[in-house]
Amino acid sequence: MQISSNKVVSFSYKLTDSDGELIDETPKGESFPYLHGHQNIVPGLEKQLEGLKKGDAITAKVLAGEAYGEFDEELIFQVPRSNFPKELTIVEGMEFDSDGPEGPMTVVVTNVDKDLITVNANHPLAGVDLTFDIKITDVREATPQEIAHGHVHQGGHDH
Ligand code: ZN
Image 1 (cartoon, helix red, strand yellow):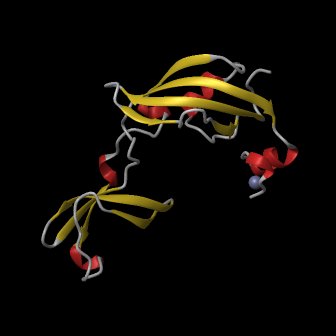
Image 2: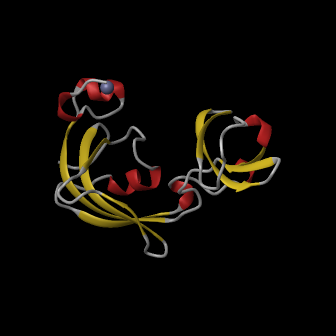
């Protein structure tokens, strides 16, 4: 069975950046399932998996623009220290959930001054060109309910 819209695809992967640094990988013997054609994985990867079948292995290079987006300088903000709880010690690398223009987003503190805190709302992988080493471990028909929900119901889960 070939990968196309409304198939549930499972794959194992190793994800590296353009320097070959490991970013993420599936634990040994495990694979990641998703519903193809419903934007559940980055668009540049979904495109390259189209037409593959169980047992196929590929190295897929995905540019940042087709993965987690380009790095956007406008997503770096300075926030008055007084916006944060007084008792909180703020250090570089701390993460906060914040309300952005398009819904909730996570920001990371990148600089701490006495009166101003600099935060970065870019996705951690924004601006990073990605290489996926992929092995397709399963392809099956999605259930009508999975298609209606737009995601996989692993092990019969409904959510
Ligand atoms: Zn569901």
